Amino acid sequence: PPYAVLHGSLKWNVSPLRNPATISQTSKKNTFSFTSMNYKLIAVDLDGTLVRSDQSISPRTIDTLIRAQQAGVKVVVASGRPTFGTTYAADILRLEELGGYVMSYNGGEIYDWQTKERLYAQTLNCEIIPYLSKCAKEHGMAIMTYAGKEVLSEDPNNQYVQYSSMRNRMPIRPTNNFVDAAQKANVVKCVIVGDPTPLQNLEFIMRKDLEGKAGVFRSEPFFLEIVPSGI
Image (cartoon, rainbow, N blue to C red; front, side, top):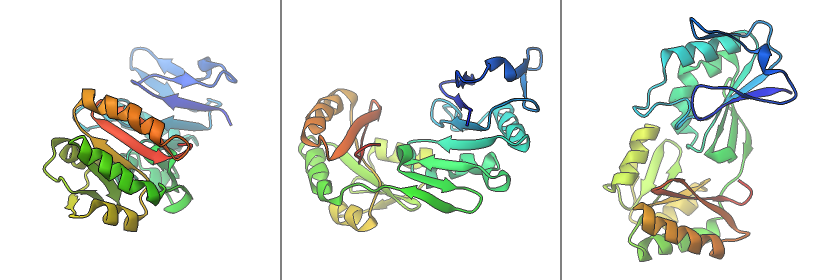
């Protein structure tokens, strides 16, 4: 079906299959009308898009997306955050009440937010987790992952681990054995955190070593994410 994507700032990038003019905008009030639009779905990113730097969502954006749902448009929160880290946005947008969806972990999990049914899941190959931990330690960096409502790390005082905890509203659970904890939790992704320049160098090494086994990319200058292949 035709769709719209909200990305980067409050703007619309729409499918070329439909005329963007079908989304009408009143310039004085800066509001949208959804009553006659042809679009069936709006997918919206969180960080740097829906969520502002202070982790809030503007009232105008909330109102716009709620009205879209009330007009029959499905809203999908699509983010690299862990599933629990999307809960605040999903709840404030009333996705449970209005029948929206959450696509978390860069697409590693997809939920019907109304029923809480997990429609899709893909987990990280647990055999590579010892390698990830070894790389982090050898380069003087911290590694973390997400399990349920918690952030798991051997370095709970690391500034980047704490930042992830704050942003996702998830407490840190310290562990003395990251590899064992992550393997038992059957995690979707791991994140190595550190200063941008050395982290960039590590990214090049790990991309080569993990080719065909996992995806490796930086979502922030200080976050190096390792996800299942194909994500």
